[in-house]
Length: 488
Image 1: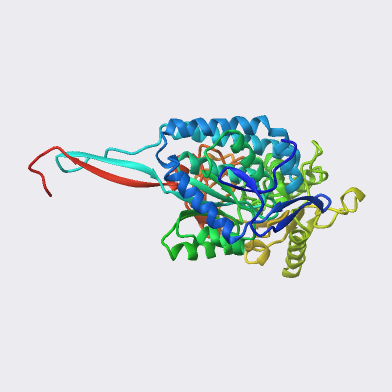
Image 2: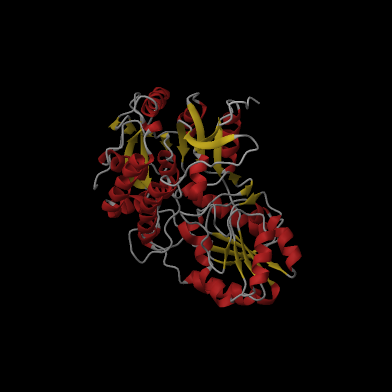
């Protein structure tokens, strides 16, 4: 897969958009042209929806046996692994993601297809005990046509996290990648085509959210929308879905805490935490961008954190040694720079970074040295608003109750970490924090087998695990009477 087809993927074939428009895709490491891809029109969206519905109905995907759907998912998983190096390189060039991270994410995408190939074989209904003479059955049935809209920060992984359970559950799926990063979604379409996935089961449409995205959300034949992105857009999608009582899953913004208690292994927390906020150059809704650090260990943590950050290798995404690549665009970098300036105006101090590297190999790209802001108060805008860049806000605390109130005094509730050698304290804090995904003494809390999603304005519903299959199905209840006299 050295070359990716750059057309729309509709009804099993790649083609140009009906209006002949294209979109330029840039490499964020140097802002040079990477590819030009076809842009969908409203007519293309309508044809894709109709083709998806035909695949669901006449094509039989909606009633295909789970083991048949599982066979196609395993083929796709195998195809992803076969093309892992090409897909990973494509992801790194398109997103600016370090190649090691891209390889891990592409492989994780394959594992998602494998997981749902197995999960769909055991996912089904129940036999609830009822107070009547008969047998009560519940069935899980596919919704029909679903729209999946994925962000630009983890395009391939997020695509797999939505598409795999959607088609495993028996839905025909419309996929819209972000305009910045459409290439790996088209790569997945090529893999699906090679796996002979029935035409119309996966449709990939590239284009602006305001036109193409809206059409994919508003179409009357679309029964479910699964969206990952920023909260403002998610709010608009929720409104549009409400007009037709459409099903929705939303994974939105975050301003996640990294809580370092007085009994934490401070050296481990300080050395590990930089990648909890600076991985993917901070462009991660799960980024632990607010560090709540107990006053007694504040200096040790900050000094250790900065030392570990200094040792991060910033550079070419295709270099195996690189740990932090460029940001997606100059505009996204400027947003981070503006927030750093705002933080200083609000009274915070810039303890490290926050500048554009002077290295000649980086001047044409969207690079930014990760920033550490100290003396931050939780009421500051830099501590409340999602920056979506490599900026850490360090907030000291003295007592646990006050810290928990401040952690929860935020409109988001997606993720977070707790560092403590006291298990009782760690569990107590985890229960009190208003967040959907928490980790203790590590950074990661996202796994294929476990639910992922947020509280408050971080979203609605859960992805991954069996929860995703539930999100892409409807429940039907059937009662079988075994008493000829029972008529109630």
